[in-house]
Image 1 (cartoon, rainbow, N blue to C red):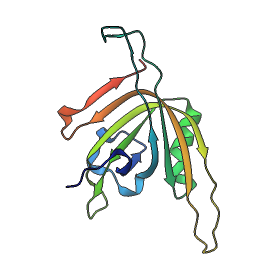
Image 2: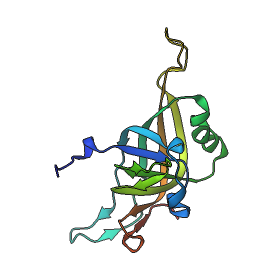
Image 3: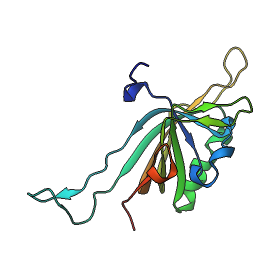
Length: 161
């Protein structure tokens, strides 16, 4: 099997907590991630021990949506000022019933949507089909649960109490 580098992974985002119902993730509820970026940092002293509060973690990602209704969860969470969950699944495959079959890696992010920006708006192209929208989303992260192959291998990192 060939090695995959991070920029070759196919990422999907599901606007819900994947861990609550992992067997019922439908392909139609998943959005394709075009770009993904975040940095987690802690202050460390000379001996390498963590001290003080963690630095704010901002997760930036771009998703491709086919219609404005797919972007509804991002906009409603932006307006609500409440934290919400987003699940990112890497190299996911789906079964014949269009439900999640398997995934290589993943993470569940809990945080506040602080920005949503459209790269270009919808419109009809010459063939009469809707054009796609690229949304740039920024989330201020409260916590990240990294998903292992088995549930006992999940690791949770908390940034905002």
